[in-house]
Image 1 (cartoon, rainbow, N blue to C red):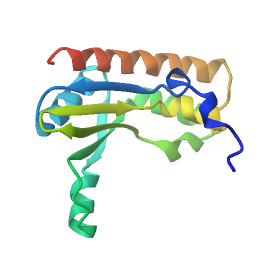
Image 2: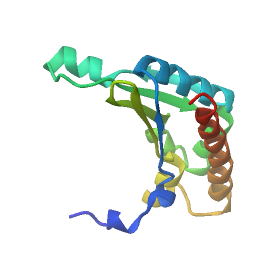
Image 3: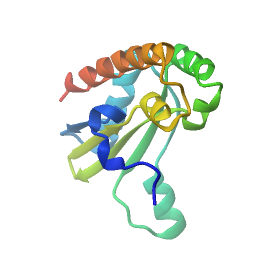
Image 4: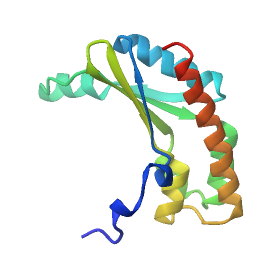
Length: 149
């Protein structure tokens, strides 16, 4: 049994965001990468779990791609505010999966909000400022997604 009731949290509590892109998978991945780069994130890591699983266990998965976005200033502040524990959640993942050919879902949750909810980061003004600043960058990236739909 979980020590908390996950149903008590809504999308805002965890910084959940979803978008639908009407383009092929490879174009969507590139579009998401550019949207986050333009908003001040770097892409620290990226990989395709679907390719890995299809190769290793013959999973027959549709395209699924993870972009590990990171804004160095936010990461640095969050490491200090969380006594370095938030690094266990780095980087901020943005996921692109194919719903059907030509239709992709983009998904993200705020690791900053999750860290605060789990106690990995404090519920104080410093962390609230980091969450606010990071949220503004994510909102900018999300607005950039709409630019090419």
